[in-house]
Image (tube, rainbow, N blue to C red; front, top):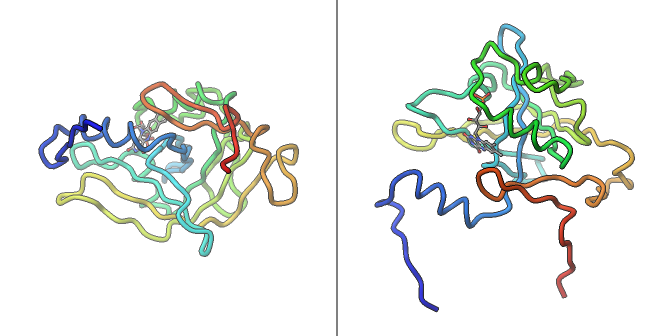
Length: 200
Ligand SMILES: Cc1cc2nc3c(=O)[nH]c(=O)nc-3n(C[C@H](O)[C@H](O)[C@H](O)COP(=O)(O)O)c2cc1C
């Protein structure tokens, strides 16, 4: 096999990003809901995202820090210690993509996209009422990467999980009905309902 080997220390940031995220696919999407001190609901997708432990139940997402600044989601989790995650399905993917636009903090992405905010039972952060599943989280730690920080990784303890009953069988999720979406690259996405097969 003829290979090209990349030294990530000697690459432009955009090429590092494209190389890494082009290989680690599909990437799940954490659709992060937060609220700011003025009560404005914020919603944005993060695909540097995953569940990293079930005991304690833990999720992480990583927010880039353009010119050292905190994006709205990160600023809100630092201020409030809370966030939600809504699961993106095929019906919601276009709305999700639009919530990634750089709206100013005083504009709620819920208003901008016509999605309905539903405030959590245990957190004041909103999730997407139209989503088939949503998760309420409390921040357990935030770890800055880079010196000075170029990204911040937010760890959340999962407090509650809400799931629509028609995709649920006990604690098992019907993936075919959820039709969750993962990110491949740019505007290319994949659903969990596509081309499922069983390994031997
Ligand atoms: C599918 C998708 C995944 C994204 N993942 C990330 C991510 O992991 N980290 C990040 O910093 N930005 C990510 N972005 C970009 C943010 O969503 C975008 O910067 C957004 O405006 C941030 O909103 P906020 O300021 O309300 O937090 C992603 C965008 C899309 C469409």
